[in-house]
Length: 151
Image (tube, rainbow, N blue to C red):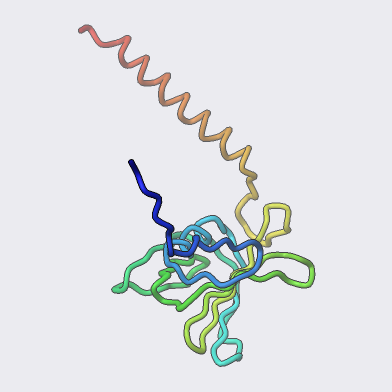
């Protein structure tokens, strides 16, 4: 016979659109989905730098730095105390990474937004189609190589 013991633990947090994330793994999951962002770095409320870039890597390692350089963001969740989810007056989501008096605000840039860039703007479907074509060509080449093999 089994006995049900009431659990005194609290349910996992549920955060929808607004809130503060302190768990490093939750922070990683959120940041990994952002892709291209506009960033604003402030210290003591003063603007230090701003720009646009791609989130290249999100990791959790106390021995490595968060680095923002050359339009690339390498984000270490250990560099921040928490991540705050917010919405602008236009109801667009943005993400504040907070560490003491430092704030790194990340504002996602959607594919429909005009992005001043010399690179061509590819949507996900076009990119997927190109990858499919490259893989199909590679498989065809491998099949051709197997046909040429005398064994």
